[in-house]
Length: 291
Image (cartoon, rainbow, N blue to C red; front, side, top):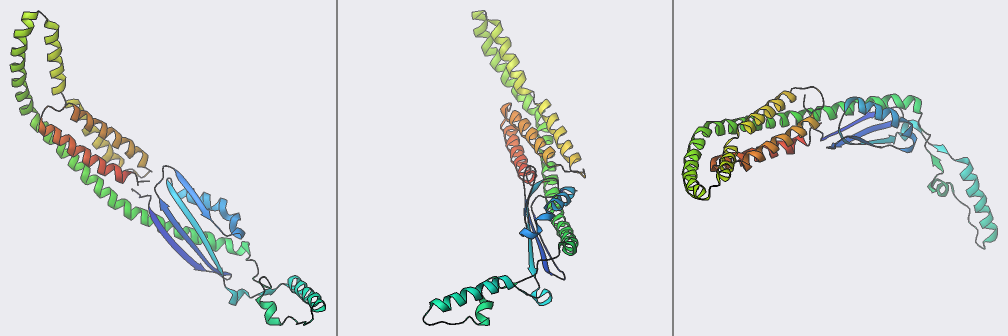
């Protein structure tokens, strides 16, 4: 199944220590690049996070953000006795030095940063729900990728069919194009023969005939275009990551379309090559976002 590399997922879970929330954002990238953003106390989970993601994703730049909000109503607060004692000591020293001494109230102490502390979360009990929530977020991300991938698949299949129709159109027109070119060539050769016989330079006549024959022959390019389109259609059925292979096939399709344009001897063939390049470019833009 085709997967897009662009997706978003957000899953949150309530634990005994507070709310755990994973937010995943993925964009296209040549390789798999994971950028975790974790609170400092959860850095120990980074290795497990990378391993879990690498099992499911093959390409894309993924930003993984973990947010943790402590439930103070359940966990409660803890008084920093050391800091309180230091503040009281400093307050006493200031009272001795001051002409107008004022004692610190309990409210003043509570307003001081760090006096009330939230107990550090227990990683042994939190790691399981954190990783389980990550798994849910990854499944949501994959579902998003697959929905976009299905849309990309339909678009590429439509363009492949259009490419095949353009190739068939050129093949159908070739006999008439070749016939008209032969008539023009005969007229040209008759004119050349008069000059060349006088100059006794028959090599030049042979070169002209070879050049014209090469210009007419586009059968090889059409066959290769057909083969590449067939390979694209077969690749789309694969269950593996196919983005890089499709990107290579788009380059080959474009190469053959350019060759067809350079060999064109008729406006209809030129227009067909232009249409092919437009269709191939449309596919190439979408392929850049396939895993």
